[in-house]
Length: 295
Image (cartoon, rainbow, N blue to C red):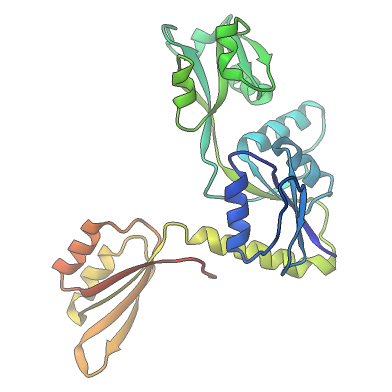
């Protein structure tokens, strides 16, 4: 039996989702309009679907796994609960891509002084459940206008007074003479899995794929540092290595007083970091990217 994973057919998560699977070792061939492709070296099929269909496909056990934005996931959770249904898809982990925010934005000149300023307004959005929760939490009485797209032009068309929409850079808001005033939800990509116990034939590859995804995510932005240093400088060097665990220390051949230090740094390594390392006695400092790692 083959695993199935659902990803966004086209949009801001598509390329990053495919890159993640590629970094996990998946090889595949996809035609231009192909909605499913088969892994050539793994028993894994990738389904390309609308992002808001992904939680449903996982909930109904059509797909074993899904890569979807938290904004879609949370909207689905709230919609299920509003219908008296339990959302059964399980969130496995957050992924370091697809970062954006669901924001309330008002037209230029709107006198915004906090959530109470929204009383009596019409707010256009494609996320009525999330927006409704925000309004309820702040005791705001406003009309939610549900649109399927082009939310940012709703005020200019007279369909709403302001909007609640996803924002990445803010350039689209600026182009439509809008400005952010409230963040309703911070979003990023998430990995979800089916609530149904995975068949024994799939368990090994499910475990391997989840382990690989975790390994890829762990090293994003990480660097591997190698350097030489006096043994006496080790305490100072260990303090300067950003976000690292205990470094590996290797004696240098024929030098009792000097060692080689290797460490994986999980935080940014800046030029200032290298200069500080050098100032305490480090030399031959080499910084390399880390592609993948298994703990």
